[in-house]
Image (tube, rainbow, N blue to C red; front, top):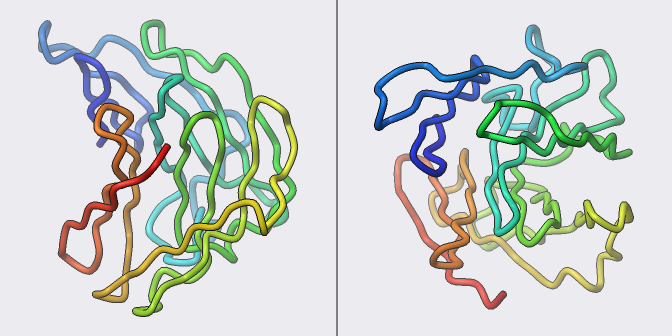
Length: 175
C-alpha cells in the first residue's frame, strides 16, 4: 500500500482507492511483470513490485517475468491509472535488497542485512536513460537492525524512510 496524493495505491492489485470519494477509481496492468513463483523483485524475497514517489511522480519498479537480467520501471499517471513510459534496465535485480527513486534516478542497494552499511552501488538516470557510474553515487545505507524490507523517499521532506526488521528509520538527504 502506498499513499500518493489524495489516494491509496495498492501495489499488489495495482489499483487506486480515492480517499475522499471512498471508492476504487482505477487500476493499471504492468505488462511483463513477474507475479508468481520465485521471480521476486529483490533478494529479500518480499514482493514483485515496489512503488516509489519522487518530485516528478509515481513509479512502479518491478521484476521482468522470466528475465532475471532485467528490471522494469514504469512511470504511472495516477489520475487515470495508466503507464506513461516503461524502462527495461539491464541489471540483475535479485542481487539487490531494495531500491528507491529520487529526482528521476533509480537507486539500488546491495545487501540490506549488513549492520555497518551497504553501498548504494547502482544508479540509473531514467530521463537520460543511462547508468550513473559507481563513483558518482556516494551513498551508504546503514541497516542497524539488519533487514531493511522497505525504502521510500518522501519528496516533501526529502527524507528516505526505511522499515528495518520492525523498526522505522529515517535518513535525511541533501538533494
